[in-house]
Length: 152
Image (cartoon, rainbow, N blue to C red; front, top):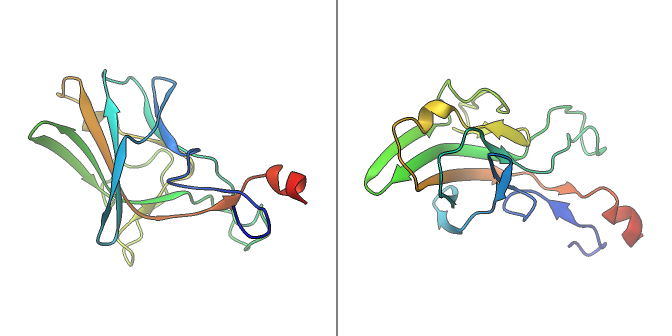
């Protein structure tokens, strides 16, 4: 909450989570890293559909800038892990398409748009339970619509 009473959403706000087979899975734990944070999600079963989801709006919609694109979470890397076995998709990975913006080479990350699909190839060959680890470089915070009006 800001001094003006405005509430914001954005990662790691509770409104950002992983959606697994239409179920909401919050991050179980996180840690600070040089250049960002890592968020760990425990997946007890293999998902048919796995997404990084959050409330989202474009800066243009909010009157903050003229940019019409929706930015929510800037990812450096996605990791699927089971014990000592890892599969890694860095931000440059061409499989990150649905719900992802293009790779930003100057920052070495890729923004999500609020509903980004984890490529099924990242999960292939793993048996549950597994961990999904998101290495987050930056986040965008947006005013939650309605809460500002009610605070005024």
